[in-house]
Image 1 (cartoon, rainbow over the protein chains, first blue to last red):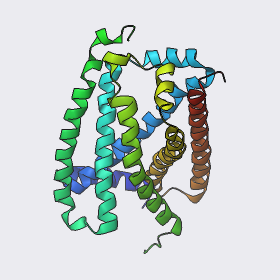
Image 2 (tube, helix red, strand yellow):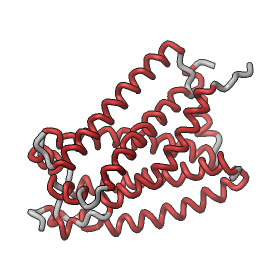
Image 3 (cartoon, chains in turn purple, red):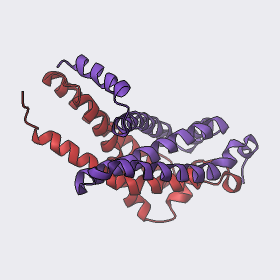
Image 4 (spheres, chains in turn purple, red):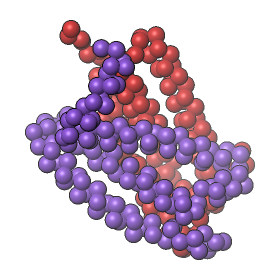
Length: 136
Length: 125
């Protein structure tokens, strides 16, 4: 099969096979690509430290505001989804958990919700523009 | 037609899981210290001095980041590579892309290590 055919088939699978395995396959790919893009941007922003504290502080200042705090929630959600699903895949591969992979999926779905509630509580002050003053 | 799975794709598969397990610990630690438990109401926004203070709290942070950076860059690029390899590209294109991925990965690691070196030493490149 040509690579184009394979790509079409994966999309068709996503539409036709509405099951947990297919959903988690797409979830893992999309979060993985998103996190890789974030990693590259993250290293780029922080690498301003190579030019010294002033350039680091000015670039870091431009990515710290309520909008980025909201985007950071997406980042954390992507990390937790990819991590929990990745652990499920790894343990299924290594310890023959595949028979119960569907129930494990629902367990990690609950864990994910709990982790996101904790994240929202911790992140809450960063949604308030007043907290981005001079600090201290 | 039956296709033999190459030793290299088994290695790719295996290393992705090993680095993933490693990151389950290291990435959560990094996320907690520098993102989630960064309390903006008491220490203000993140700046050079704050990161430096955080990193100098223990000599172990240097060991931690020397391990963490290559693992996270490897996991990201190897993961993208696994997706590309799924779509059966030609072996010539595969070689070219692999070379690009290696060079790009090494540049990312070098940039991150230089960044950390400055943050640990307190600037003044």
